Length: 401
Image (cartoon, rainbow, N blue to C red; front, side):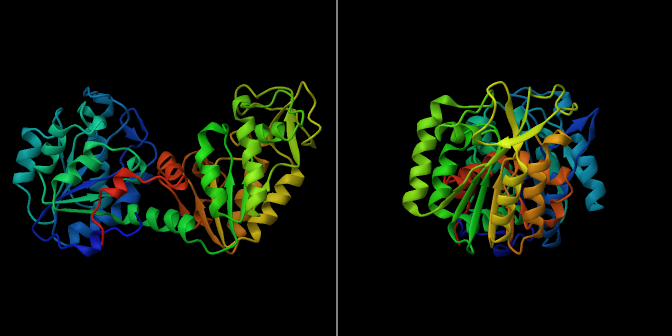
């Protein structure tokens, strides 16, 4: 999965190139409120334009579930992309995605022109990888480029179906960067390799914990999922979040770490409160107690100060760090201290630092450390499955070198 052909390995001059991008951007009243995903797609698009390709872009937006919904049209994306590229991006407004507008726009293309298709999820077949829509997409192009890591863990028409119907299917720069950073971190890391897992549920990260224990030198567990591990150690965890069905699994993982000679770090102290803040950013009275001394009527909502120092020390000594999931309720300033300490340690570390998308990406950006990380993944679900050691259909479908 780590050895795929890229846009640098092909000649696209005069050819029609279909590019699967991730333009699943937040919209408010028809305006794009965060254009990070558009900016991230520009290097691949610019390369294909410069090489004289006829560039046909496609993406999903939201979950229209096979029905054209006006509020989920990609028209605003075409408008903003035209400004970012300083070049017209012609929007093919077909409710069936590959319709008369798209076919006419593609037929009229000159080398270096850009067309954007309508939301791929307007077609019900998209998420089912149905043959009819895959064939429609393939009929528009000579070459397929997948640059959408955010959907790489799903087998859809616009990333997997179409690639099986064209001779040349490669990955774009954004996809290549994800494969390089996440793939090499897991398969070929510079050691010591420290993995940090947080977030709410153990169930979401079962296979990730198992896989990373075999690959890393130190595994740090924080966030809501830590309390199930603490309960597995026999500690009182009060009203903290717990997954009682996974206590046996947590015991197994602690045994596995010991057998493999890996460090498994759990919180040694905890920031507790009477109840979860409502709203989430409301003022909240907290105290810090040892992890084995949580009162029965209190709940843990962040790692404590000593734990923050313990985790930060482990991060500072690492050469590769992968982080997925915050250490506490980072949306609340009082409960963001643990996540902040880990982010700061990663920013200061002389290491390759990788953020595995989702809430961790939101947290480091919100706390102002985004530009200090080696790589922030653009796909939460996809990066988790990568860290589990799963094959991602969208990556696997590209041609091997």
